[in-house]
Image (cartoon, rainbow over all chains, first blue to last red; front, side, top):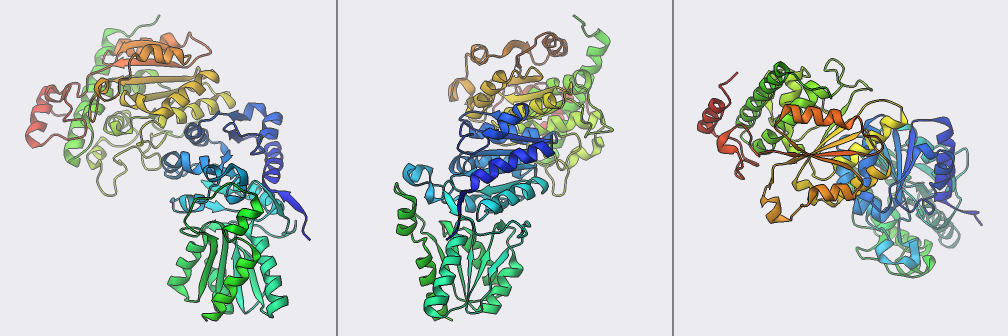
Length: 313
Length: 278
């Protein structure tokens, strides 16, 4: 099966490489610098690294000031604090003035596990994608996280990057392209489309295999690594080519990526749809896989949804 | 210690008078806005832009300029008045304040108004931004300083103290804060709403240089900033004692004019008390 690695390790490693290439990159953390993997940047470039302590509102404000003075800023903490605690700071001080700040949040989603609901951020895609001027990226694996880190550094303006805590399968290749706003088709098929983001992309691939082997259904699999701007062209084309769409995200289904896709399709091309994700509830403590199972985020759930979509065609 | 001569003080006072007229007229034309807190901060802003800060209206994006963060963004009319007087944009544009399509938004917008260094409006956030600017200046080894004007009501905001703790930890001695201590916030006296005193000892406890000043005395404002140039290693805060609505008697100390513009009749009276229209 697939090799496993943590997205945040790729982020930390790539940041150091970027730091060597560009002296205008400044990195900030908020007392979770080890967990967020920004510590290594701090060791190599102590003068361009600031730990602001447990003060996320200040983290975002300081980032704004640095960016207003010409720096490209990477600010990192857990997704729940980055987007929840500091929402107004992101809105007023980063998004509205369109400053060059990359909020790279780790520990997003229910796979945070044992820490429970207080630390499992399931609403961050919603919070960030609704903000004008802010783009949203959720890489699928280690390799794509490294590429995304490079691309967001070179893309001017506010960007939210969503990373998880756990080991996730490596499903992309080094030479796969990564472009803001452009999705990639990992498998082609004509019976149904599975669109995943973040750690759900590998589960879409697994679901596609099951659909093919057990049910003779050919599924197209799309990696929607940019949630905003959405790749509307690929979404509409997939709907036209396959006649049904299943979306999958480790996030509440209300106002996540799937909602974004349903909004696109409702205005341009109607097909049956099903959104795989977490209902509008808080999580709880448990093992990552146990939680993914309980909250409906396995390949089997995607397969079931594909059948539902096909049956409604 | 260098001091201002009488002629210069007179000049600064005249500019401040003009700015006050702009504040009253532009908010009147808009039919809304915050004249009270604009008038209390007018002398500080005038002293900064006309005597203290290194800046160039011909080149608003000059990298070595001193920065101004108006953390109490609702005092925008005073900032706009000062920027127009300094030559960042025509004085006539002040009358477009808050109107559709204007460069002059209700609260400062760095993307719309030349000379505005940062967008503000949601209280409590400016000081963190100033910290970032002060850090960037140090990283780039630029001599620029970051001036920040906070409202006294903002002292109730937790983020101010996050930033205060951080600034002294980072030894941001290129950061100078004015607290516009006019004693009033929209719901009443700061001491009645949630007491912010003792303010001096609070800032001292956070590791800052602190000084009480008269926020309407040009010499006190200018000289106090100059004195700070001698102090290294710590950020500084000047608790500027001011009067809300300063210069317009019926607005002075008035809660009503925190967030309300003068009507036609009040405008006439206000202009008279400011020595007549320009």
